[in-house]
Length: 403
Ligand SMILES: Cc1cc2nc3c(=O)[nH]c(=O)nc-3n(C[C@H](O)[C@H](O)[C@H](O)COP(=O)(O)OP(=O)(O)OC[C@H]3O[C@@H](n4cnc5c(N)ncnc54)[C@H](O)[C@@H]3O)c2cc1C
Image 1: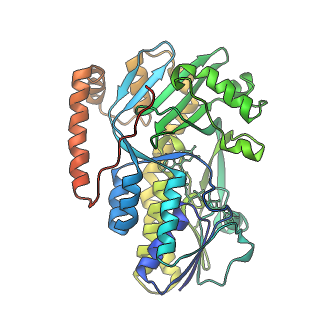
Image 2: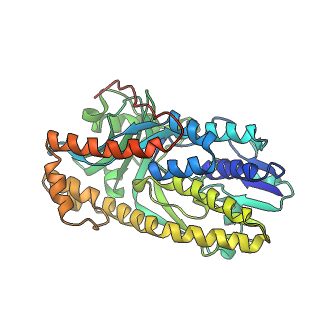
Image 3: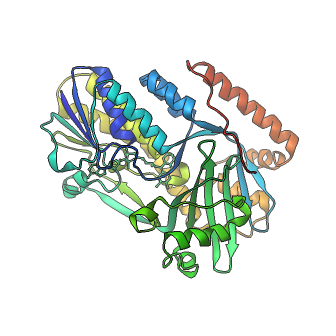
């Protein structure tokens, strides 16, 4: 089979790997418009469920991803005028550059033809074209009516920045400025860097002049606002090199159908989920797994693509509900700002409003050091027992350079 993956993000590269593993005789090409090593964004988070899937589908790339990842073991919530509070949980993070590097290397090892600096004007003759060119997919937009594409724009403004300040763990930070509240989601993803996503309402964005400042001046303003959180370190906007700034509104993409002849949508081209639940990469890679399974079952292409779409729609639905509830919580954030510290962080963690009432009692008790350490250690046992089932070393804890 001749397969072209239009887009070399996590979806396209991982599907190329799985297609070659399924049958080395497949001719697989990935077309990526950027040169090697160039991409948007910083680190991404993921959890045990994705790792388990990665090990089941390709232990070689899974081992590389896991051993390059950082691990964090709770959430911290910091807000102006409130005590620091803590939320239970653990997860992993990895630089998007690193992830794409690992996947591209694996794809090339298996014989995939990865073509960089190559847009979609010259797609080779293919039995299957996977449209995995991201949320703004050109292939999908060319036939938006057929796919029934809808793009809903979120109200808040956000920017995906990086910083050399290595956060201790996943941190939500909220600052009250003269213009209103502005906040960040931050986490370390290697020994030297953290992701730092800043979000605010459009009114606060304009009042802080973030709509007018260029990338350098905008970062300087945010460094001043978040000085107490950044340990004197700077913020970096990737897009500054392109002469713009990275401020955006989240785009919620949905499609009525995912296939059109031999073209099928995958990853963000098919569906997006708000970054507040950090699952878009996972979903893109799980799409790749589902399409690989569906094709491996054999038979004509059209029913295989239908099976793929059906399986993924069912899996996506709960996460899309969670993502919507989560983004709406952040759009209403100022309404929660007057809550006392522990109630505020509990409201943040229960953004979907689904927790049973005992969770609040647990949350209150784990604000104290000893019960929190006990809960962390119980979660650590669970994490290690899951990890023992995977044939690889544990991920590194980042080497911290700041508090
Ligand atoms: C602020 C933010 C934070 C996020 N954090 C997380 C997180 O913590 N965890 C997580 O799981 N997800 C996270 N995500 C979501 C995640 O980044 C995406 O869901 C994921 O990258 C989707 O993968 P993809 O392969 O479908 O698309 P993309 O990663 O967008 O890849 C598409 C690729 O196609 C290429 N391309 C586009 N157009 C063309 C063209 N015309 N010709 C050739 N190539 C083209 C692009 O250059 C790109 O390489 C976050 C997203 C945002 C915005």
